[in-house]
Image (cartoon, rainbow, N blue to C red; front, side):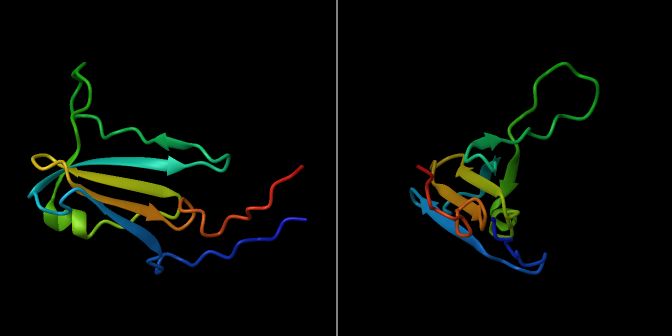
Length: 108
């Protein structure tokens, strides 16, 4: 028998923030998003493709310092923002991706 998990609605702001390197020291950041799957794997989400019918690949998604500070991940999302100059930045981990609501009992 599995127990249901009651997750808060869209008003909740439960997430883990991890600063690395010098932290938020730059003015521009490269942003990558990942999803934590139910089987325990973490997969990269597809980046935003450039507009138009060009055959080039997508460019790196960049954001300003103000936009990075206002980012909030979905419960199963991980957002990694890396500074373009200092290589420091921040990671935002959603509540489900940090395994806060995970049952750690192992079978066997």
